[in-house]
Image 1 (cartoon, rainbow, N blue to C red):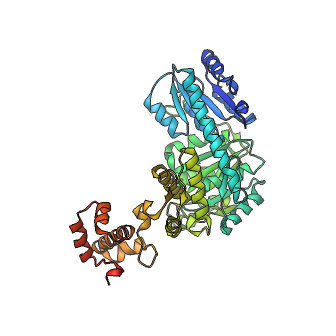
Image 2: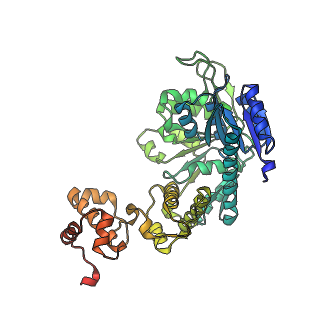
Image 3: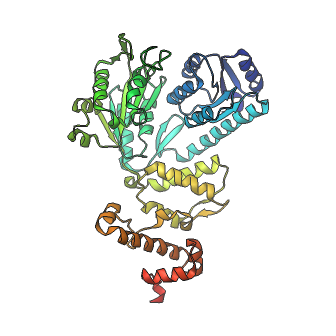
Length: 464
């Protein structure tokens, strides 16, 4: 898409501020301006926008709340917050909620143009990454879920079969396996894709506020309820709602949720008026619900209501062939986004990455590759000695030790000695058994290293 086709939405209740931003941007972009956050959400649902310039302080619905609703609807829309006050708390909350930048008034035209251009450039770079991986994953609008593994391809086939239905879906899998991405894929491939996708992390909301967050409340319903609040279910009408970490719900709230799933209606807190909704419910859990059922911490009837279409995501260590695919994808991504030129991942480093169990799954891999690109040198390869030690420490047979077994069977002192032995061994191997270089890497004196090598019975095979 050319720069002239890029769409910018300005949201500010002050007419003068809207007109000022329009003058700055209209020469370069297709610009539209509205005075209210809810009108902005309606515009976003009608047609795509690349960037939203959003005022923080608006009378009806605050800019921070509008930001969250925009990100719930389409996380790909970049939002730049604009405020008359330089308040660190608002800036922090904005950035944590997904805003790209936070600009304070009065601003120079160049400052606004530069911020918007950065966003546009970033989106262009991300778009360039995708064609390389055609046919290796499932498209989600502007994104892809990449995989060549057969167990993930089976997940894709389920999505294609059930996306057109309104049946409830329960996604299970370890943390970091991409449960929300799968939920977004279900929404993106469904007839509901022009309506909101609303994501809620049930574990992140205090239990006493969860009912109000999901179903809304009336003015005066409780202390601090100064205005009527529309809940997530009501906002998601016609679309999909994603309930992450459903296992964290308290039993008394599970009963309320069950009724909503059965009747497709609810009442706001403090109201007797019934509101009917049409939403598809997609739930997710990293804790096996079958275990909670046995412990009577989760209702059987709610489980069966949610588990109409079960989707089990495999951990990264069980996705055969996906590690190199994902590692190189993230390398390309961060090279472009961070304007770096790291050449690639060497065979020695890739072998270590493929043998590591990845307890944090794809999220852990992405974070590691970002770190390696940030620290990497231009036109250089990433090698084994660039990897952090926690990826390198293994048993001599090549397998990672069972951490639970090590902690319970051999005792703390022995476990500590074994860790130290493996740590020093890997450093020696990296430095080709050069004791001076190894001591420098370990930040200890060479004599200390020699003493520890004797105690831990470490010696090069060439010495035997």
